[in-house]
Image 1: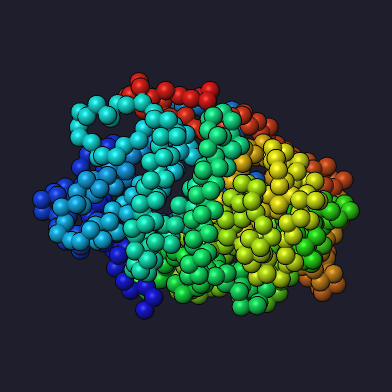
Image 2 (image 1 turned 120 degrees about the horizontal axis):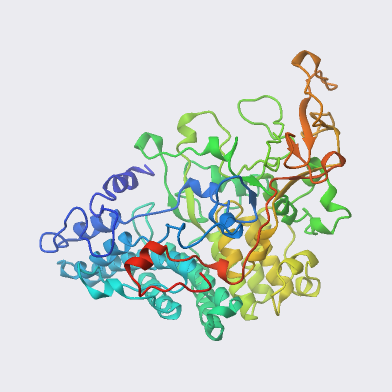
Length: 596
């Protein structure tokens, strides 16, 4: 029942507005004539459904650009920090074909023989898609050309230069506002309605408000609060609607994970918009083999250390916290940690014994759980829904915007952040205590925060923990002007040196680290633990050697290290990307900015 209508829409999606790769001056590939189409609500619906584009479960694999993970992949920001990137070799991000399809609809829909309410609903969806399109461009390039028409071949507007960020963002906010006021609340399951649009609206307003506040190079700080006001207002209206609530059945060790491994999120009270997957309806996705395996993304130690203790105290306040081994790291922690990262004693289906973490070369030893479905049933693996927008984000947008404005109260904190903490059984965040005793480590990391330092830092912690591996962290670091945090190479598990270690938490050794100069013995010669199980051997040494596990101090111990490169984040240049040089050649009115 949950997916029939949605899957039908997916089949139709793209059939109406499929287009060739190209510029703004091409008609849709299907050559839709306004005289023959755009006459009925069905026409409008078919076209708009063809524009449907949502993040999917690959999102769990897209945290490679942030400080949450280590990766050996050729991630763009790593190449940028390595100094190997220029306008000549960056060729992505300057595609405008989707915008052309959106604008074509907005030029054509008014001729339909339908009521204004119907017209405004579909126009609102189109403008929502346009606002989302431009947010991506703003984040990447800052100043970009604003186009509100699909344009014709030879139109001189195709050769215009960049429009100022302020002008483009005013248009983006106008699009979001129109969409929020006109898109229907009741829409086909799995498609964006009023509250999904509102969530995107609040997200964009928070992004721009904080970006303007912290980025002096764009000279827009004077009206940052206008965007922060808007973010808190829209988020507050979503809260006041009482349409959504944090998914909380009292199972502190399960409820959070349910959001990421459920086959049906369409009735979950926290999920504002769902991307539906159902193998039986020919819309499926299975990311298990990439999330958990020889993957290109492994959780970083810095992320592990961010989670609080179960009693609400800071893990990093413990003596020698950075030298705690894997088993101790997971003891008495925020339950979200063990629902996000594989923990000591975790059992992988169909195994009957606890999984032993693999210490792959260039990875951290930690294994990601979020996005992984612990099953071998192919139908289950391919039919897990993805939460596009969660109410948790609305609550954190609300709290952060108010904190940045300096107006956050304890009552508002209780109605937002503390609802997330209650789900996992953590004590409430106290506004006065947070501001009186800010986390010194977070203060060092985010040294540009002014007033309300303590509570702002705790909200940032909450965002990192709540949305780990949901592809939000990189954007957060960019808007907070905290790119310097990307210069630290990710580290992994800590080992005191050579010897035997328990990784499952049962007190029995599972692995043994030996000097890299030694040869791993044959199977019949390997030492066994007290359970009669052969130990797993790793040759240990410094990075760059032929060792199989790299430790910071080699045989004398330290955290696992994942790379030996120098990362340099040039401010403010690296918060942006250059326009591909080939586009500048085609249109000389496009000028590079911020040192590109």
